[in-house]
Image 1 (tube, helix red, strand yellow):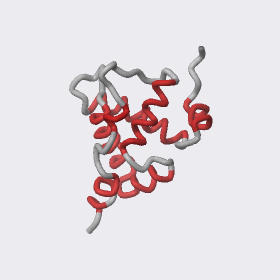
Image 2: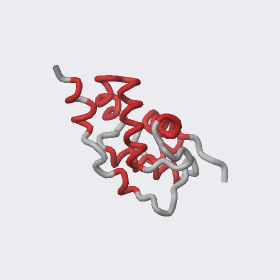
Image 3: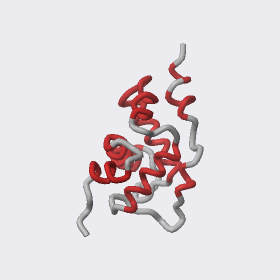
Image 4: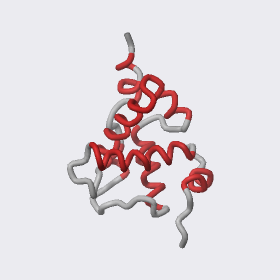
Length: 118
């Protein structure tokens, strides 16, 4: 089976923009390099932290707007995207991994908006 491209995966799934899926994929590499203690395996919680840092680096106070435009409104959505990529062989999971690892890692409003308020 040939690996589908991320654009096609996004279109078929319909929940998230292709840009959101590419961002999570890029964020995995970023997290493995910059944050993870064990680069060969990044947990859901650690990936959420890496994605938060990457989003703030890339878009600053616009991160919340960018992510919500792409259909990403909570850390669980990062998990949904990860498990969509696992299903299509773009990522892999350990037997101990669960989509629930992404639930409530942080509040989007607090980390992407409130920290920038004057």
